[in-house]
Each structure stands twice: as C-alpha cells, then as structure tokens.
Image (cartoon, rainbow over all chains, first blue to last red; front, side, top):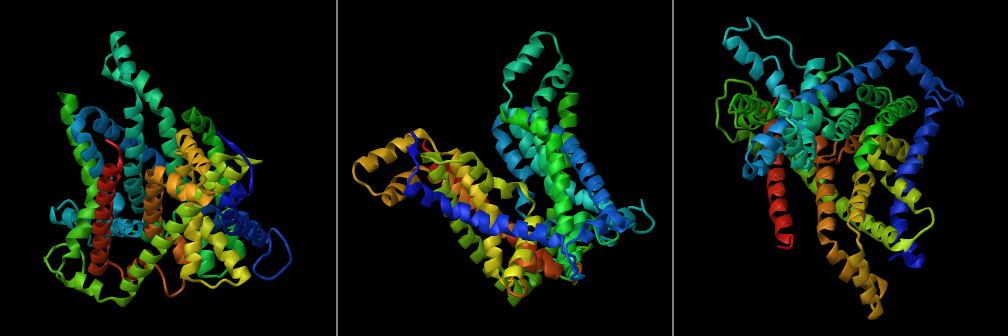
Amino acid sequence: MILPQNRVAWASVSPALGWTLAFFVLPFAAMVAISFYPQDGSGPSLVSYAQFFNSPSYYYALFNSLEVTGLVTVISILLAYPFAWILADIVPERWQRLALTLAVLPFWTSYVVRSYSWLLVLSEKGLVNTTLVDLGILSAPIQLANTRGATIIGFVHFFVMLLTLTIYANLKQLSPNYRKAAADLGAGPIRSFIHVVLPLTLPGIMVGAFLTFVLAIGDYITPQILGGNNELLMPQLIMMQIGRRGDFSSASALSIILMVVVTVAYLFCARWLKIERT
Amino acid sequence: MMLRVSSIVYAALIYGFIFLPVFVLVLFSFQASLFPIPPFNGPSLRWYAAVLADKRLIAGLGNSILVALSTSALATLIGFLSAWGFARFHLPKSALMRGLITAPLTISYLIIGMGLLVFFNRIGVPKSLLAVGIGHVVINMPLCFAIIYSQMGDHQANMERAARDLGAPEWKVLSLITAPLLWPAIFASFFLSMTFSWDEFVISFLLTRFDTTLPVEIWNLLRAGLNPKTNAVGSLVFGVSVLMAILFEIFAFRKRPA
C-alpha cells in the first residue's frame, strides 16, 4: 500500500537527500569546477587535463593502473574459482560454513595492516628471502618488495577472498537439477562443468570482476605500501599532486579522468551486470 | 579420488596463501628484538606494552571508535528514514532521487575524499574529525538506505496502518512499529557501517591533520619501516575485529526467529 505524498514523506527523505546534495553533489561540482582553474591562478582552461595527456609520466600512471588492475582481476578469478568450487562441492556440507569463514578471516585485519604484513613476507630480510637463502635456493636476497609484483600479490590476496565469497554464493544458488540433467544426458563431471556450471555462473563472475576492477583501480594503500614509488599508479599520482605540490586543480582533473575510466569499464560490463539482476 | 586429492592440495595452498601474511604479522608481534624479521626470538610482550604506552595510537583508537559509532548511528538513522519514506509514499521522481542517494556507492573513496577536500577547503571547513565524520556518513548512508529499503515489505505497512488507525502519531509508528520490525536490517546496516568506518583510510588521511583516526596513525608508523610495534597494533586490531565478527554472528543468529 503506497500513501500519497505529504509533509511526513518529504520530512523523512529530505535528510538523506540534503546530505547527498551538500556533501556529495556539491563537492563533486566543486572538484569539476576547480579542475578547469589551474593552480597557477590563470583563468578557466584545460591546462590541468592537458598536463595529463602531454606528459608520459602522467599517462603512464593510467596505463600502469589498467595493466595492474587487469592482471589482478584475471589472476584473482583464476585462483578463486576452483577454490570456491572446492568449498561448495567437495567440502562436506556441515563443514562449509567454517571453511568459508576461515577463508575470509584475514578480511578482519585492517586494510593498511594487511598490506604491511605482505611487506614482512616480501622484504629483503623477510620470510621468503630468508627461507630461500637458508635453503640454498638463492645465493643472495632478491628484490620482491617495492615492485609491481608485490602490488599484484597484495591485491590478489585481498580479492581472492572477496571473489571466493561471491563465486561460492553463486555456485550454491545453482539448482543441482542442472547438473543432474547434464549427467542424465551422459555428460561427465568435466563436460558438465564446462557446458553447464561455468556458463551459468558467468554473470556472477562478471559482477565479481567488475567489483575487483573498481576497488583495485581506486586504491592508494596497496600500491603505495607494496609497490613503492618506482612505478606510479593513478591513485598515487593523484595523492602526489596534493601532498607534494598542493595542486588541487591537477588532482581534481586526474580524479575525474580516473572516474571516466571506471565509468567506461562499467558500460563495458553493463551487459553482464544486467543479466545478473533479472 | 584424483580429484579429491588435488582438491585438498589446492585448497591447502590457497589457505596457506591467505593466512601467510596474517601468521607472520601475529608471530612477529611477539618478537623480542628490534625487527619483525626471521629468526623469531620471542615470545615477548614488549611491543604490546609499547603500543599501549603510545599516546598517539591510543588517541587514534579513541577517535576511530568515536567516528565509527557516531557516523554509523547517523548514517543508519538517515538511511532508515529515507528508506521508509520512499517505500511508503508515492513521491514524484522517486527513482531518480533513489538513484541520487545511492550514487556514492559507485564512486571510489579516494574521489569522494578529494571532492570533500576541495569543497571544504573552498568554504573554509578546517581539516578535522568532523570533516571525516561527514565523509563517512556520505559513504555509509547509501549502503544503509539500500539494505533497509530492500527489506521494506507490505506486512510492515499493514501494521503501520493499524497503529495509525489506533491513533498513533507518525513518530510513534516509526519508532514503535517500523523500526522494531526492521531490526535485523537496521542492525546489519549499523554493523556494516561501523566496519567500513573503522577501517577507512583515505578519507581520514585527506581530511585530518593532527588529531586523526587509527588507520592513519598506523600509516604514520609505517614511515619507520618494519617495526614489531606495527605488528602488535595490527594484531590487536585483528583480534578485536574477529571478536566483533563472532559477536555479530551470535547476535544476528539469535535474533532470527526459530
């Protein structure tokens, strides 16, 4: 039963609307506006955007971000899918809850601390290097931290947990009848998986992939702690504009460029994201 | 059989990968010497003592709790009110307004924080915990709205109508009928908001200067490089969060009708 609009209705929705307008829409408009007013005080221009397209050190940050995020998304799905499948299909039903809870336990460390703890594993005198040198596999420690590889490992660690959750939920939603039907029609477990289970879970995978992409490409912490400053990703470049140069105009322009990239990715995935909703 | 064995091996490898950094973090928080690197020479509680003696970390902890509790309460309240308004009343351009309210969910925290930084800088709001709190309501309110809105059903509307027919004013209907009926969704919203606010870094980093939240204080510790004190504070946060999650599980399950 839906009531006609009245004073109570408007009073109940206006705090949320007001908050969104005042602290989301207005700040966003301010950011767009300031991106057209370069830091040097000159009038409205596209200087802050031109700076991005004209200097390789800037646009390479976007390429790096896209490459790293793409790799992270693909690797995370490839690792998480079989794991989620094992949790959903191989592990006995009564242990599944515990197995899943354990699989996402490190979610509960703070995000900053989680990246730092990979530093403990990967640094020059960290666990991996010490172990490999002690075993005689390496003669001297190799550089693992402050590399693109470290950034990717840190990201993959987080997103394997996230994707395991979403893919597991997806697999559990599948009616067992599909697989029974496939088996009745003579398909073995592998054929049934490739032709039945995989296509049915694809929309869910796409949603997970999109989520991974969006969260990873906007993250400053992981690349800053694990990747260091040898190779910048977009969020690092944005933060650098504010931190080192106090250049709000350039930081705003770069943020908007990053947002446009995410929007394009969304439109690219929209087809699959829609399938999920029906 | 082959499948079972390879599954077990694969699952063990993934579990190993997932737990490796947490294990190293917690183990070396008990390190006796100055560096959290092998060989392990503990156990010692000296770094936990160092954390508890660190005024900045303790202040950050207090600030984080304050910000998490107050912003989650506000986000849940505003989200609940608007979810009720949109579910119960026929408002013009309802879909558009709902879209606007949930829009912040699709924007990364970095960009929301940047926008607020530029905006507050313009209108003269100083960097402060208040500024962070405003930002945390921006990121959490849409979530609360979405969760509670999805749980608004007809049976609650009927009970609300009954209460109204019996003469209850609107605020009594909301607080005595609607809110108790939607308790699980409200509780989940509040808890999720708490979790996100508690762990949020980039908005706090951009919008505070000296008096700041725990994640930013931990970030400041990282400048000192590898340090068992960071391990200790990280392990403490981990322990508290796991405890919270367990309490949530017990609490949320008990609340469910049998």
